[in-house]
Length: 511
Image (cartoon, rainbow, N blue to C red):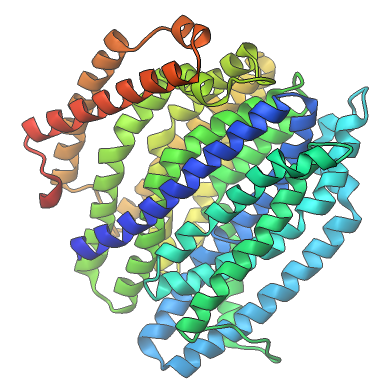
């Protein structure tokens, strides 16, 4: 089971790594061509709204509710019934997405007002008008990418993890090409990014269709109703809170950031993008595979494998998440400068982005644990518990935002810190309920692993503090000196960390 789990999660990780690297290349071009200012704030709001809803309707709440239903049907029924479930859920899903997309395109200014009221009350109406126009272009991406996630959920259920994990690469390529080439031909160059999002959505959906056809699970439009649709509704509505709290919190951060100094939305975006790299490679990769495996084991009533899967996912998450967390915090500014500080993205923007990255990075391990523990409830058909936890975490985030960002005037740094603290609350409560309901509790070997990882991480931190170059080195040197310096400290500290683990008796193959 461990070998199968590791192989599947490794495939997802490799493909996700490729996607995230290209995502950083995309953000490099956005920073270089457009900087961090009011115009980029406007685009990022117009992009974040469908992107946020994508994580709810796409690989977030929808996938988390749909995969267990499909896995149960696959285990206990024939392939005809599996296709029937896919057809009925797909038809209803498409209908809802079309309605939401049409309404939002027509009411784009109202939607921007709801999500970025700071733009509306700004003395300069440029940001509000530009964001409204771009939202009309970017929002159909929600429909396209949600259907892509629907297709990906089917493929994941049939253990075809590589294709869905690779698909985001296509969006990044589309946005890079649009930023570099299409922007030259538009009166407002930054509008090219909005068109890049739309084109990327189309390409991603078309890419997955041949693979659905290959496994003979291409959805078809049907009439009538099916019990699986009611089950999906029952599980999905609560799951909107339960599995997507971190994304809701990030959106709340963006909403409040629109009333802060211009550039705040962009600073949060660039720091969040660096946070997303280890979070996707570790947390999302593990969660994607864990949900499919947990749903299968629960359907088969295999409690031993169910518990082992949770334990194994947490071990890998801890083993990789702890050093990543320390690295993000200690190397925040060198990473931001190396990746983004060119042309229109200045040193001030790099420094401000680094400050919020430190705040976000501090909560990385909590974000990863949430990604692993939330699917445990959903794989068992329990949506109420993640909802209760999610509501507490979300309300906590709102209050912490107001206290840290507004009352104590920490600005965008306070918003990032509030999100990390709420992730800690979320993870703690999820584990509390797992333990209370006798579903899972930390094993002694997991606790021993945690102590060894803590010691190895501490040694790595000491190494970074003593051997990394100071900020002036990165500010005064060019791209290759920056890259070589960051690469050296990252590779050397990672090697030291794993050597320490080995000396402490940890063998990856024996986990």
